[in-house]
Length: 127
Image (cartoon, rainbow, N blue to C red; front, side):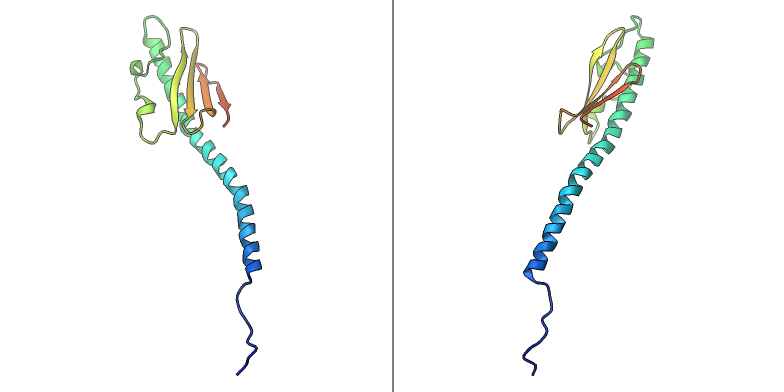
C-alpha cells in the first residue's frame, strides 16, 4: 500500500479566490445590465409617447377650438396606463392651444422620465 497518495481537489484558498473573482465580475456586470435593460424599456415609452402625440394632433385638428386635450378619454386610442405590464406612467402635464407636453415616468424610479413636446422633441432625464 502506498501511504503517500497524491491528493486531488482544490484548496480552500483557491476556492475563495474564485468566489472573490466572480463577485468582482458580478459587481461590474450587474449595474451595466440594469442600465441596458432600462434603456431597452424606454423604447416602449418612446413608442407610446409618439402614439399619444399623434392622437393629440388628430384631436387638435378635429376639434372646433383647436386645442390639445389633457384627457385620455377624448383621444382615439386606448389609455396606455391601462395596458398590462406597462413599465411607465403616462401623463399629459401641458395641453393648451399652443403647447403640448407628454410625460412617461418610470414606475420603479420616478426621477427617470421622458418627455415629448408637440413637435416631437424628446427630453430624457435619468435614462
